[in-house]
Image (cartoon, rainbow, N blue to C red):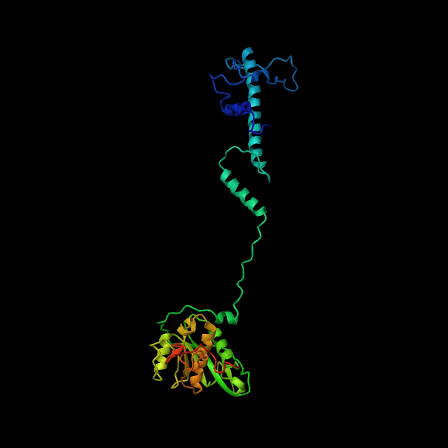
Length: 342
């Protein structure tokens, strides 16, 4: 069959099937029609069991079955059969067109009302049969090391006032040395958005460094989260730090600094300074954080403020390095350790 569908002649016959018996109309295939179908119409065969010479049964007059009527009726029946065959052929073509769509999906179909539904079913089937493209795994960020975290600045407002509620960092960090043991707890104010575990790790590593107060094995520090501590190192917002420092008569609001609130169990580390540092240290955040811890714990251990006495020397860890490195015309270098030469 031609790729464009059935021949036009078949379609024309199909279009006029309903009018084959309409009176007073010249139909295709009837005498007088000039479409060429009469030349190819098959001759009527006599019914079985009757001789070709046997006259036809008598019919009432006026029914159009006389000599001419017989011929016309025979041809009409012949063309009726042809029209019926054409109908069958067209239906087969249409149904075949619907069923012939396969995996190559190349058959051209006549528009039909069910096309949208058919397309949806076929599209779903094709989608199911298509291989799913491989999904690239999401890149996994490499966790930052302790040193990398300690070198970073973190966002925190200089005027932040927290809710004053603290949470102890869970766990136990055993004292590594054999000197005088100090047991401490680490509390972090809720809602700061800072990593409490990093702060606790920094305190333990800093205090037990030989350049710190554990120098020479004279002291050792152990972090606990339950039981009675010797002191509580507390990371808190500037507002909460000021409240706790005021309990010991100290004003930390002028320079937004930290303190050892000696009248309480708390050594207060100002979270703004922990997160953002100070101009005196620039971007040396790890060194600045080590200085904060050593300076305030130095007060808890009984050390007072000091200043350097020679230009270019390392500042004493008990100098107020968050505020200045120059005092009395002498400028010193930033230094986070009590025993920096170790």
